[in-house]
Length: 76
Image 1: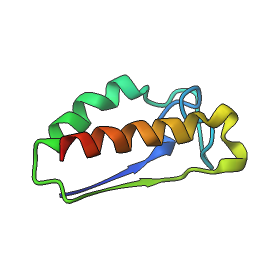
Image 2: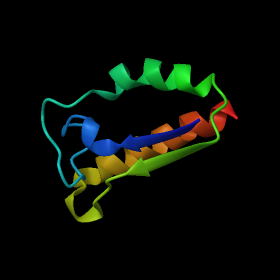
Image 3: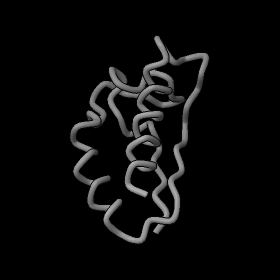
């Protein structure tokens, strides 16, 4: 299993630095249980997509991506 996460899915309050952000997106706390279940499988990799540094207010999107990467690495 390979998990690809398009950061556009998250609310713009958590991930403003994407090319297509929107306020009604998912908060990270709703994504966490899904990711926890995927991490229990035979996960071989994680891809994070759609970070646009010029749009990333206070590095919120980068910090969210780093949190997801950290969660993945801790599961190894």
